[in-house]
Length: 257
Ligand SMILES: *[C@@H]1O[C@H](CO)[C@@H](O)[C@H](O)[C@H]1NC(C)=O
Ligand SMILES: *[C@@H]1O[C@H](CO)[C@@H](O)[C@H](O)[C@H]1NC(C)=O
Image (cartoon, rainbow, N blue to C red; front, side):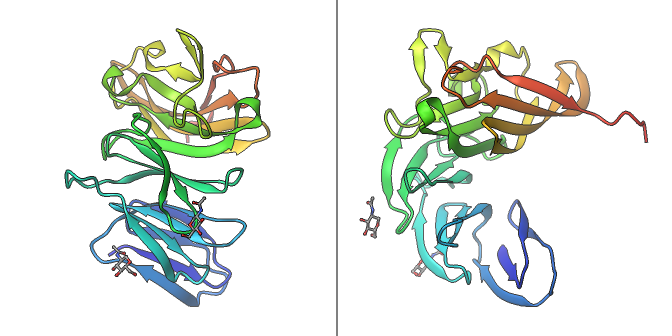
């Protein structure tokens, strides 16, 4: 069963699927653990102000205290009874809330950081609407210095939206991309890639120095089975609403070894 392990002086490094947590052990004493039977964990984030630990799992969001004691949980299971895997879990420090998205239609919610209740929702496909398709999402500064949700996903064609990397509003018109004209929006169109589904895997993302970055693994082409790592960067500034700054750089070792 999935477990979160907290070690003294330990840093919880990675959260792989449901089971593996890597901990750097300075002192290997396990102080506390949080375990849920029969529920998977997908994402975790720590509130840098309160120290509370938030976990996004299958059908549940959890809030734990700094000792990994459960404070609140809330179900995300849709009425139709299907499972809902957490795809995005990110704290919006500017507005003091928690942004969550699941594979249930890729829908997202803005939640109260205290009791996890839903403060805002919008029926827009944001995350991948499947368990297996990758999605990376995080809150960072955006247009007009307002917080934005940066999302990277390769959805399955236009049925689920045609944005690969997008910046989504979190204060007004929540989860919508900003549109100024019919064909301009704060998003990169999947049709620019001329590739099929499953060709880009979004691994992680972060904000640094006025840019939002995504790390990806990409298939070289429709008829080329080899894969390469690429880092993607978009500008967060106001004058780049349409992601003209979108850049991909291939990360490759020169030495064949
Ligand atoms: C959610 O919290 C309630 C009340 O503390 C607890 O009884 C229940 O087992 C929890 N459910 C999960 C799935 O964590
Ligand atoms: C968040 O939840 C707490 C506890 O239920 C409540 O006191 C507070 O008013 C809520 N905040 C918002 C913004 O709804």
